[in-house]
Length: 451
Ligand SMILES: NC(=O)c1ccc[n+]([C@@H]2O[C@H](COP(=O)([O-])OP(=O)(O)OC[C@H]3O[C@@H](n4cnc5c(N)ncnc54)[C@H](O)[C@@H]3O)[C@@H](O)[C@H]2O)c1
Image (cartoon, rainbow, N blue to C red):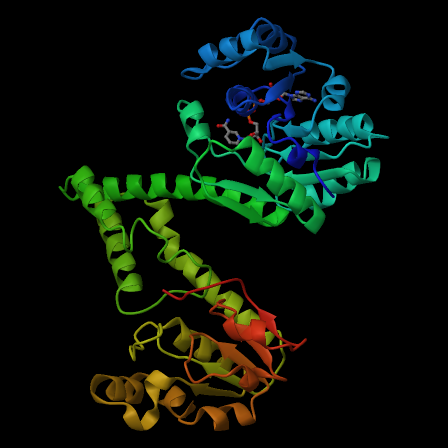
C-alpha cells in the first residue's frame, strides 16, 4: 500500500493525536514544531479548553511556550470530534492511558473505545492512513485487538506500535533526542507505509530507526521500563549494603559505572541459559550472607539465584518434554572457551537429566577426556566421575546415535548437517545452526549467551 506522504516532499502531514495527556501534548507540540499540522483530540473538557486557548494541559518544562507558539501559528488545534479530525489526517496517533488494576492487569478500556471510534471514523475512507499506537500496551494487543478491527473497517489503513521513550520533567528534550525511534508492524505492506511516515515526521531527529514486529515493539517498551526499575533497585540495594559495611555508596556505584565494557553495556543482555562459573554464584551468595549478618533486606539481589535456577529448570523441562530419547549434550563447561566446570549450570542440567533417566552423552571440545589435565582432571574424577564416563571425544561418533541435541555453547567444528533429522534444543539461543537446519522437528529458545 502506498502512503500519500511519499508524494509530498514539501507538505508535511496532518497528524491527529488522540489523548492529550503527557505523551499526547508533548508529542503534538513537538510534531507541530517539526512542521506537521496537529489536531489534538481530547475528551476531558478542561484539557480541551486549555488547548483551544493555546495552553498546555500538562506541566512540562518549555511546553507551555511551545504549545502557545504552535497554536498561534495555526499548527496545533484541538477538538473533541474524533471523526472530523481523522478525516483531515494522514497519520493518527493514539496516546490514551493504559493504567494497571490492583491485580496488575492492564486496563485497555480507553484503547478499546478509541479503536472502535476510529474504526467507525475510517469506514468507507479511501485515503491511505497510518495509525500509530503510542500507548504502552501488552504484547499482542495490536495484532489481536487493534489491527484486525481497523483493517476490517478500512483496508487502506496501516497500523503499527510506536513506543514513546520520553520522561516527564525532560519530555520535550527527550522527544527531540530519543535513544531510538522504534516501531513495530506485522504486515509487509504496512511496513512500507509506516517507514515512510516515520522518516517524514522525524526528519530533523537524529536517532536510529528500529523497525520490529508489533509484539517485539510492545514488549521492548515494557522491557525498557522494567530494566530502569531494576537498575534503580540494584543501585539502592548496593548502596544499602555499602552504607551498612562502612563503604561510600556513591564511590562504589561511580566506579561501577566506569566499566562500560561489562557493567553499563550490552554485555550479559542476550537471553540465553543460566549463569554459572567460579565467581557469579559464589559472590552473590557472599553478599547475601553479609546482608543477613547486617540485617538488611535485599529482595532484588536475593532473587537472582532463584531466577537462575528457574532458567535451568526451563532447560531441563524442554529436554524432558522430548521423552526418554538418546540425548547429546553439547557443552559442559560453564561458558565457551574455558574448561572450568565449577558451578556450571550444564553440569546441573546433565545431572538432572540423568536423574530422570535420560540416556545421555556429552561432547565438549574444551573437555576432551584424554586432554583433561591438572585441576580439571582431578575435579572430574572427584566430583563428576559419572559425567566423566559420558564424555565423548569424537563429535561425529557422538552425533551418530543421538536423537536429541542440546546446544549449550557454540562449537567451531559443528556443521548444520550434524543437526539434520535431530531434535535440536538450542539453549544458547544464538540460533546459528537451528536457522540453517530446515528441520521441522527442531526447537529453538530465544537468542542467548551464557554468562
Ligand atoms: N507519561 C509518560 O511519561 C509516558 C512515557 C512513555 C509512554 N507512556 C504511555 O503513554 C500512554 C499515555 O500516557 P500519559 O501519561 O500521556 O497518559 P495521560 O493519562 O496523561 O493522558 C491520556 C489522555 O487520554 C485522554 N483520553 C482518554 N480516552 C480518550 C478518548 N476516547 N478520546 C480522546 N482522549 C482520550 C485522557 O483524557 C487523557 O488526557 C500510556 O500508555 C503510558 O503508559 C507514558
